[in-house]
Image (cartoon, rainbow, N blue to C red; front, side, top):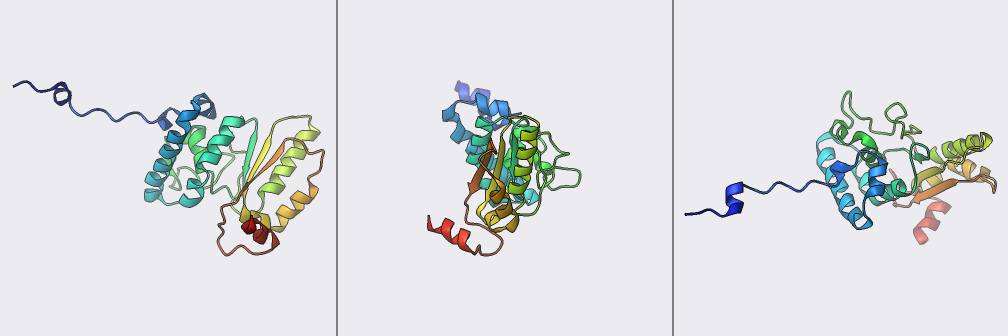
Length: 207
């Protein structure tokens, strides 16, 4: 009795993930737009798979997958700079900047840091671990760049909780019409360690 070809050849190999072909942000730019939802799902699957074993900030990173894809499609790190407040939502950025193979070492001894770290990658321009510092740091980078005559983009990603910090208000107060290519992305995920309070929180919750 003849066996059919599928039985003879054994089980079909699992299709290669799009994610496995992402070694740098340039690879994200090379993808077709219709492939981006698949990439986003593969990233989420990888986050859940790895962080269920190592621990880490799962929720914040599940919430910024599409945002991080969009940032790397539009901007060009390390020339352009991404300043992520707290930086615990930077795991997807790490995956897209050549650290996928080391991702299972997240928060392990000798492995990837749980936050962005300047000594870990040229794509990490700022290391943090406390909320509210990104706007001020990003503004400082923008002013320094302007003094040197540069034109790279400074992109700050900050959550709604970070906008209740005094240092964020100071930064916003010092942004003026002459500060060019300084982009602030508000990640209004309605999430903070404790209940977010105050006028800014109330306003964001109302829109």
